[in-house]
Image (cartoon, rainbow, N blue to C red; front, top):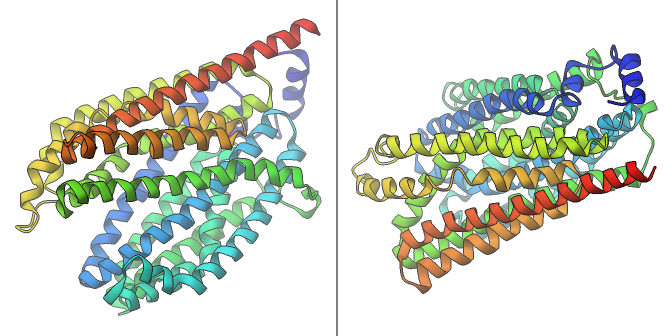
Length: 472
């Protein structure tokens, strides 16, 4: 640390929160401590999603199907808000790293303005086009129930976007503990409200929607209290902090838009994989893939949490021009994720028969058990190699290079995974097993390509920084 940086820290130590001190401190410690609360919060959210499905299923197959038809649209909204959040976290953390508190405050105000704009557009579009969209994806006899549920949920789109933006603001300044508290509390409140509103109040499927809205209102109220009333965050929210700037808007959106599109890539990839599975092995193959993929998504939650923390830590390093920290951040995140992915793979391999029973306990689905076990055994090779890809993509998001992150994910998910799945499953005739291996090999090759690209980027930054220091 040079004398200017030390002087800054000495003068502003009281103003810094623990999160900011952690964010601009030792990179390994920052990643470890920031990702821990996120892992807890995401696991609670995943558990709630399973519990919610159980409560809704009690209303019958039509109600469960109705929620299923709304879910892809809902996930697009969540994806857009999460993408915006990635842009917000990156923008704020880079300004914190650059010791630009006023810039971080201004970025926060622009984030809230974007929240309003995006929310209004999403709400108007979804409420007007929800019925035709549901018809296109085949809602059929479940249309009325899907509309009843969807109209309530999407009327509260601003709550979905705002809570994710507030989470991003807190993550951007290194405060993931309060993010954990808010996400965990929201999930638990929703889980408690669902049976009360669905059954005790007799609202049916509308009760499930209102449970979501009420929990979001309560979480939003807490976040507003932290950010605006209590004012114990590092960033300040006030009119004085706001200086309109298209540059700040662009800075947020150049990460936010590509990050949002990445969620659409996942949907496109899933649609293509499902189509291929139906062609080679029928509907049962899709059932196996869908159920098994739920297990995979829960298993990689720790990796997603580490990558989310990496965005803020890398952003702070970029903002501070401490490029020598980037190899540490990237290598540590990747190795930590690889270790966790490997441990998860071993556990999944051993417990595959037991995990499968959750999806095959009825006589109608029991015949899927052997195939689902085989699927999980193949996918064990998928887990470890998620880490190099996701950590590399999130490093670029932290650096403000959202388009690079999007291109790397597109290379892996849309090109390599689908291409290899098509070749192995359909061209060479290995059927659904070939498609599984295509997913594994596509993930490995795509992730390693992203890892090498990130290493080259870091090497160039460090080299240019040394050259600049030498010349000066």
